[in-house]
Length: 110
Figure 1: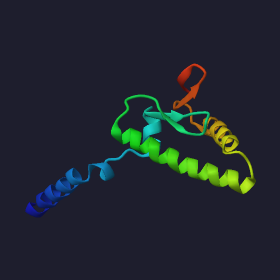
Figure 2: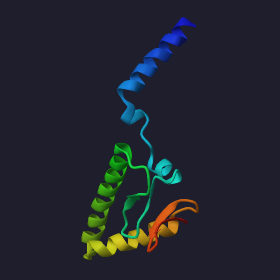
Figure 3: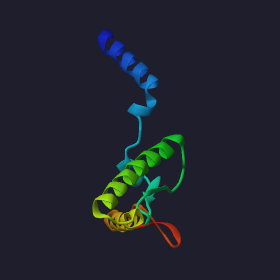
Figure 4: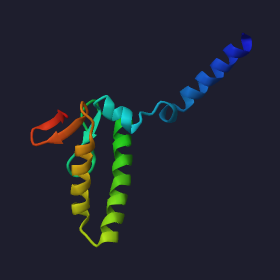
């Protein structure tokens, strides 16, 4: 019993030291809870309750998407904006019901 409690305390201490990595929201969780949604330009947007964690998640995902879009555009000899628009359309089409997308009227649940 003492060892279990001690292990619990050590684990708790580690969690307090590394909150950003252990308790970070995944992209799927952020989408499912309505914190972020898909935009027609191929990037994520913050729907509500912005926090440093959400801002970092969106920034990270959008940075990776931008890199990928540039690679695709270069490979196909096309404008990156075209790739972004196609990706945005596909992302919105593939967004599950109940998650947020942005349209002419702003953020709406699909």
